[in-house]
Image (tube, rainbow, N blue to C red; front, side, top):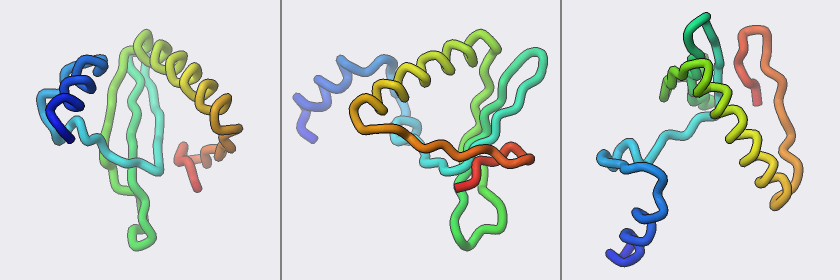
Length: 101
């Protein structure tokens, strides 16, 4: 990527990404959401055929207020995605809270 393209992307980015490793993100195909009186905990995992259980790749803890704001932003983005690409089929979480695909 040339310098001009990097600069354009940096101007559009909603936040600074000082560590390229964090900026790359992680892939997750499993998730669990838990909560207490004070916080919501989002565990993101990766399940591959050779693993017996998903491997935790990231954990994010949010205040209830931020969790609700996140939910509303995600809902708006999913609606936009579906308008452009069609309906997303959902998978119901199992009794353990795991999203099974």
